[in-house]
Every structure is written in C-alpha cells, then in structure tokens.
Amino acid sequence: MVASVMQQMEEERISPDAVSYQFILKSLLDARQFEKAAAIFNHMTSRNVVPTSQTLRMYARAMTGAGRKQEADAALER
Image (tube, rainbow, N blue to C red; front, top):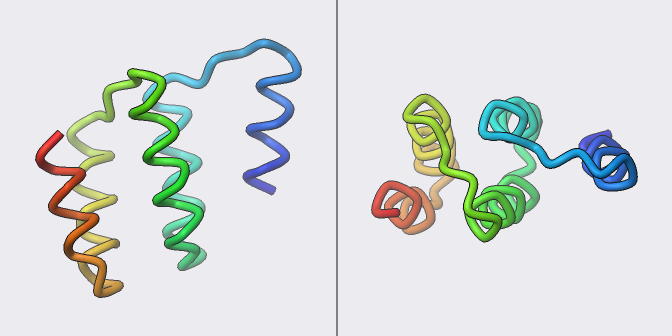
C-alpha cells in the first residue's frame, strides 16, 4: 500500500512533504517493516525533506526497539 501511495504521488507529480513522510513512516513502523521504513527515511532525507522532531523521535524509538540502534542514532545526528 505504501509503495502504491508513493508511486501515485510521483505519477501525479506531487512531492511528499515532511508530514506525508511521517504518515508513511508510521504505517511502515507499525507494520514492523523496518527495512522499508529505513529506505523511505533515506529517500526523504536525500530529497532534502527535513523530518519533524516528532518523526525523528518516532523513527528513532521504533528502530531502537527493533534492535537497529545504529540507524536510529544516524537519523538523530542529521
């Protein structure tokens, strides 16, 4: 579902903003799809979209809880 939302946004030439990415990340993290969440987080930052402080906390907490502390720390250092 997340991939289809991202694809549809790209097809419609809609650039996701920080809040859009936050909802996408929350969906992936809630579903415990940590690899996809990391890919979306990296995609977001590579497009120079600055995550909100809430997004950073949510992402770091979920990744740490999943045993992926290094990725959490990297996100917080950006």
